[in-house]
Amino acid sequence: MAQQAYMTETDNGGSGPERREPRLRRLLARVVTGWRGDPRIWRRGVITAAVAVVLAVVMAGHSRIPNAIGNLGSLTETFLPWFGLLVPVLLVIALARKSATALIALLLPVSVWFNLFGGLLFDKTGTGGDLTVATHNVNADNADPAGTARAVAAAGADVLALEELKASAVPTYEKALESKYRHHAVVGTVGLWSKYPMSDVQAVDIRLGWKRAMRATVATPSGPVAVYVAHLPSVRVKLEAGFTARQRDKSAEALGEVIADEKLPRKILLGDLNGTMNDRALTAITSQMRSPQGAVGDGFGFSWPASFPMARIDQILVSGVEPTTSWTLPATGSDHLPIAARVKVDTTAS
Image (cartoon, rainbow, N blue to C red; front, side, top):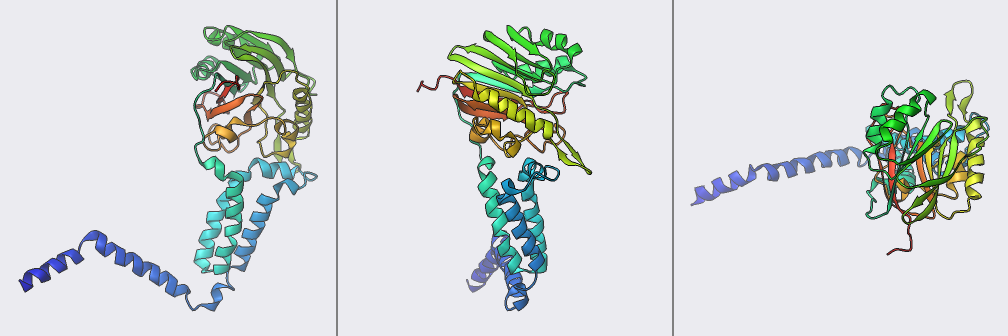
């Protein structure tokens, strides 16, 4: 009996889970022991800690970074979410240096980043809604406009906006979309396709000298909606000039003024704004409209470049309607990803 008891105890001690736990404890003990009693853990990694503090300050105070030199503020705000990638790099350095000071300092940028973008990490998509809208910069050099049109239309949008329409390709888009959309209008390089009647179609002056924005009233079953389509000027990042966006900024201000003067209470803006919701240059627009992606989307919803999306410069913004869900559509032949959202036009309905 004694021998049997001894064998049983030995067999239990050799089981996988029960042996791995002591090994993990020993490993953690070694790490703690290596730091315990070492007074240099507070003196090492001061530079890493300083970088962590600067990172936190930059993210928290991004709106105070001046645009006077190369629009540095707007450039920072465009790629602001990606600043969080510096945290794991600094963490590895802090652990390698065995620096308690650096580890504590890292709590600052982590807290700031989660305060700014933590809400985007969770799926907030809802249900319901009575109008689906979509927008896509199709790229003037798109080699397959018909395929792109069919792919975007497959998303089931009631209202579809297209930007960067090449004049010679417009008939191709019209033919590809005519079976699903009875109403459409093209103004300059932007167009709007709708399953519902449209009226008051007109160009919107965004101070460019050519037509890249339009407005129409869409008679949805739940009431009229003022729908704007815009393609703001592109921005460039140049070594000698920084983030050049002066024309984009002027056009954003002009568009914001027109939207502010809109008589209809329900407004939707669809288009390529060449800027993110964090970019202060779009304040004239974003201060009076909100993004369904931020309110009811899943993730960051980056739309550009399509090969490796790094920023959401294509936008759906709403006012006077209630967003219920927002999402990014699969890639087409464009260098942008199409995006879509569903909203509740009749906000009085339960």
